[in-house]
Length: 255
Image 1 (cartoon, rainbow, N blue to C red):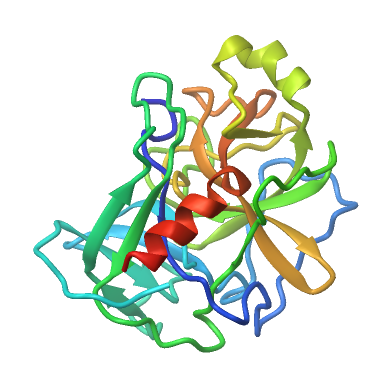
Image 2: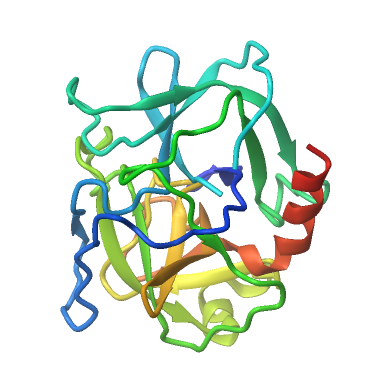
């Protein structure tokens, strides 16, 4: 696959969401090249999906919780920043249920979203809290600055995840612009962002693409796919969360 075949976002429809207790440092007017390290704990909805041996393989966003845990082979790690640290207070959760959108197409990568129900409730605090979900049918303006975060590869020659969580500001690209790069692969279930010297890459898949409104951060997209060598001059593709807001609420209501 390119970036990933599945955008895995653990669930959470919290009453208070999208307001980090630790403020992120985002400078929208700087010329972002390849991103930089995030302030520790400033993206408290960012989770790391890991093997049981502790190897990070993709990201996710905390959006709810509860349930019993079957023997899934992966775990969800909340509160992570430094993958090499043994001193961070982490919450490691198994997964009690995984629900992939019924219209997911592994050939076209369309409708690329899976909800993971955590085995037990996350303990919310300064370094673990949910992001807000984009409302259904949300229309965002072209060139809106968006932020994506994660532990994905930082260069085409790097084969391992960086130790520290990173962030980068990317502009939203219009569908018409996006089709100039990707043709008819682009659907209404996708967002296009980047192409200005930075990109998501392998290991970021499933992670958040958020925008700020006042002091509230909202999940607009989920890292999905892109150029196989993470070409920073090509925009990457993100699952359009607003397209799935009603489906998410339906799945959550079913427990």
